[in-house]
Image (tube, rainbow, N blue to C red; front, side, top):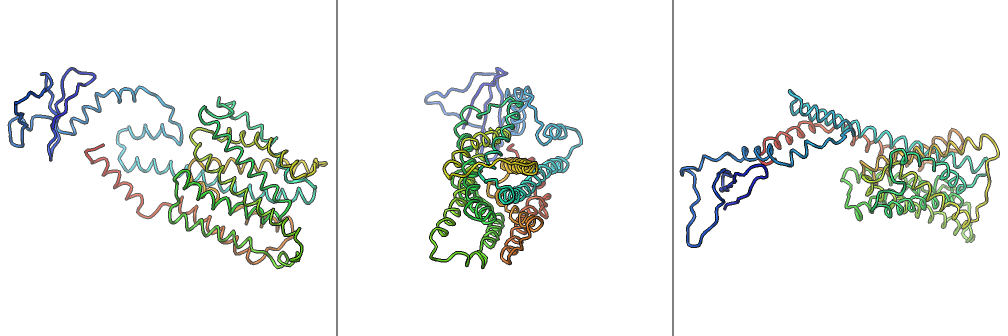
Length: 435
């Protein structure tokens, strides 16, 4: 079998000979071979004259690598590789005396550092979500501030995030070709918040939040598999399922709740049913939003995403207020305004931590880590509101803490023998003739 081609930087011809055991190339100055009718062509076999004169496959590959236009063009480009210290790693890899072990160590340290930063942001977001639950309840009970009104104020204040995309020179409505998807993401996120905050009027904040988180985690795993073809590993799936079981225990009704309303009171029954439905619908919209941003992670920054959620919330929150006929009640004291500003700060911090993590982690893992908001809110309730939790709530909260802790440990702690296995695989690639 014979292949002939002309190199871009040379007039010589390359005649490539492929043998069942050896691949060689021979360079000649004569014209390319053109088959003639009736002329038999003989290909040299092992042991014939001229069979071993051609350079080896490795020499042929190195020649192409050194003289190819692709290498010259690649070396001519100077990309600002500053993410996670990529420029320093490239210099270290090219430096003399750097072995495979040192290159793997530097790469592993950068990867672990980025993963730690991501999980620290996620845990901080869960803490902010727990504070957000308690602040919303305090604003409703002590200052008579409606949940949807708090959502509207939150969206208006967070419009200040417009300075981030403007400072970076990004388009406020996303890059061309992705604006419709970004709009759908913002609408889904805002609808999720509207449904979640509206459900607080019909059911208790603890039940509404737990239902929202449970539905978000379960549906984000399903939608990520269906829409993005991203599936959870076996260990991650078991850990997430354990956390969902813990949330289910938290949702078990207390004896007071089960006996508070008589079975003959249809108004109370349908009122609670509507609140539970809103919480589940909020989980569906949030799962769609998480999966939507996961598909936009390389095109849309966190600041642009926050601005999109803010301006869509400014449009949908008043519509929800008018639909549910929730009254307007402005804060009338300095503590009330301080509580509202604290609520806005916690919501922004939680959003930033979650959205940044979506660029590296599965949406279901991001949502499962936020289940820590349930035990955090429970502990804060004990400190602010003297409400003793029930036994199922305590057991469910412990299961959530253990599942999230195990998830973080498996992602950050190196597996035994993982470094040696990674080194052996890397050395096998380097020794392979096909690079």
